[in-house]
Length: 443
Image (tube, rainbow, N blue to C red; front, top):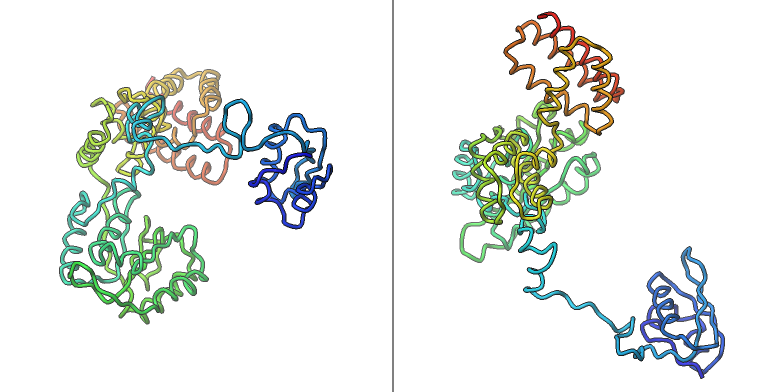
């Protein structure tokens, strides 16, 4: 009599299948219905373990997979007979702490920065005092926190300057870790930006009553906080619907709008909030923060590498930390150099930019077209060339102010065309032709 199928297979198959009715009574053939992928894979494992059974059953998957024919005899599911564990009972033991620190790809080999989760989240400020380079905002928030009160806020400025981190740190200080999740609603307006979100999520949360006190005895404010990140992506209708909610629920709810472009927030909302501008972080502040992170995570980076990392991040500390994390994974524990940062950040090497300028100065359109074609074939982004070209042109002392103005005007035109989906090759040819005209005027 053929042996019964394994219990794991019985548990994941449909109860009404003939499996439990027929096979346990020794019926030589039965129809096995695999209700899901797990059942099908277990059935396949059972087939491989039952090698000498003449009887056959038919397994029918409930999803789009070919039918499986199973031999019913002989195989012992619980013991393969070769001393090894069976497919059903074997379990992969999680690695111990020492094992996680050994072997290729380990934390000890690559450094914690290279393998742990989201590094920008890991190094977010935990309190308002840890916010860098935003002295005015920190001073106002500290005064508000002392009185356990907070106005409606509007934070605006470039990305990566600490806007979201600041309000989250302030909320943690206000409510403590126990009440933080209950009192704070954080929405990314880029994903949820319609009027329906304002009417449902925001309005329902704002109407909730608040209760409870902090376990540490500190005063707990009688209000909640709604954080609308990237509020400049909200539709005009959603922003208009938010006005009434902010007024009606002012006693129990405070709002913090976060955006990159304050001009995209309607005037009725900005007039209801205290506005704070977040400045781009200085190079010195960024270098200090990045060196602290590299020291904590045991990451080796050269002085030239850290300086270039700050340059390509353009005042965005979050971007700089992400680049540092990617560079650590790429180097595998070796020292991070300027070349590594160039590869990670996707910027064009200085030699490439110099080659384009040399082709423009040659006055040969054929040579210029060949350089642009090679640039496109290598996968460089045209927008990246426009950005780097702008810096090179502005800093070039061999160009007159009139020539610089003509080239930068062309850069703006090309940037607009690229944003509208124009062909990169044609736009770069047009840009380089303008540069060639201006450079050859000096010859």
